[in-house]
Length: 53
Image (tube, rainbow, N blue to C red; front, side, top):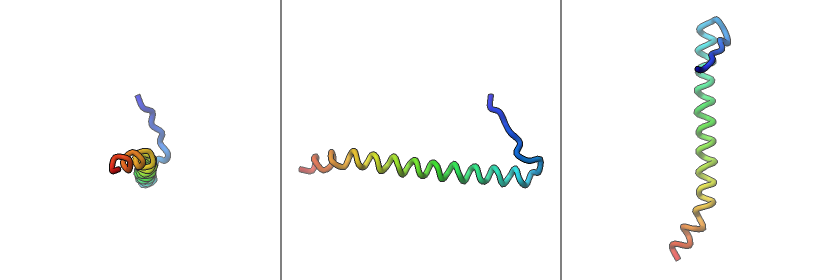
């Protein structure tokens, strides 16, 4: 079961916190995807180039 923490009693502040968390999640996922793509290209580029020869 997940625990929930109330950051504020005010709904407006809770909504801002949720929006911030969603934005951070998107940013982190984008960074992770870019990093993984870069690593994959670095590992696969020599293999792909050798296949063309």
